[in-house]
Image (cartoon, rainbow, N blue to C red; front, top):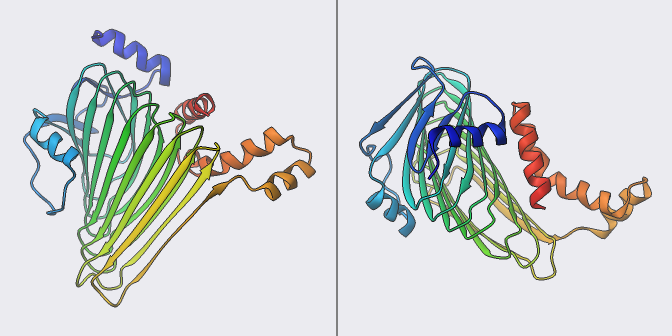
Length: 334
């Protein structure tokens, strides 16, 4: 177990000196924001906002997390949350916003050396615009992450995630559009070079009218790695004028690598638009040949095509030091 100074030094060495909320072994050990910007506290369990089916892993978190960490965003700004640990833990975070807030929240899973289960509830209030970025890497043991997002009226949420876990990993992501005129855009880049099976489950639920959701998964499997993508879109009764779109793309970089995409739609309303699709394959020889004809080597051509999956995530990172950190970690992992 590290001291607070040792944890802080590790974060600064990885990401540079900046303002952070640092959560180590399930406890907030540092908060560099003042109370008028971000209010951090311990809280009781949150009220049930939508009754949904939960996985066995979420139930385990509900039963075993000793308390909830509440992170309340009060101002339009960028917030960086750093998560790391070296003990087996169940962690529950509640990230919520004030109304009319425009913020970018970076939720970074830096390093986990023991089995960990982390549940996040993201609550976006009326007329708020939130960019929520997550980055996951360096799990030396079994890691489970759970993200439940709840959006209120006229809110807009962009969820951009980059996953590069190196061990057993599973992720559960549920978005519930609670009130009218709420929007969510999800873009997930998933890279598996662990030679293990990793699972990603997504549920998007339209509960009210005039809601819009877009889900894109870009997955890259290397070596003997396997990625399972399960995404389910639901439009409930009376969610009229809803627009739901889900798409997955998979890139196979190994002879034994596998990606499975399992899309599903459940539609209980007629006056809606809903679509889903999936495409999986290796690098296209014609694309490589074209790039080589323009002067690139084969390796450079392959790297450029692989980066085309990742670049849309990097573009939305507005902090240079964080973006450079992501680029370096991607290069090392691939």
